[in-house]
Length: 206
Image 1 (spheres, rainbow, N blue to C red):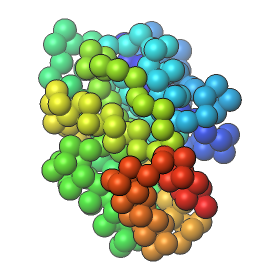
Image 2 (image 1 turned 45 degrees about the vertical axis):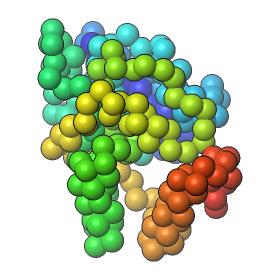
Image 3 (image 1 turned 30 degrees about the vertical axis):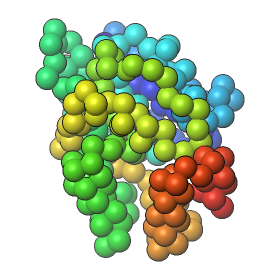
């Protein structure tokens, strides 16, 4: 079985529903939606989802991303193998808006952060074999996907699958592309210097 976990934050973030439309009521797929009323931080929602799941393969699906049917079918097949060669990884990131700077952001995310550094953000839609989950994610407001990557890459480097994870560029369009890129950089610097995650989350929400 493949367990798909979606840490939903607000009701308008329904991009993920396009991914799940053809996978309802199947015996080989388990869909677990954890909303903000159950847990405030995304890390808590992911922890709750994992402990409710039963699948051998887990897919952490970003609520503002969508995957093709072929991507999910691939993971379903892997979940049925006695010994899958797929340990953990994500899908090829791209935005739903064409802009040179957004293409550059996706390029960096795919080829520098993912392939060279082994850090996979949730908008890649992270998948992993159940057995490599060692401990719950720390309860912080941001960068829980980075913490998960640190845990998993001790086992093996992530695999980047060629199916696209198409992510909404709404935050870039709302705040301005250059402003959002600068803010993301400042947040990463703050994380590096271990500033309180609640403060970083406050900046992220501005």
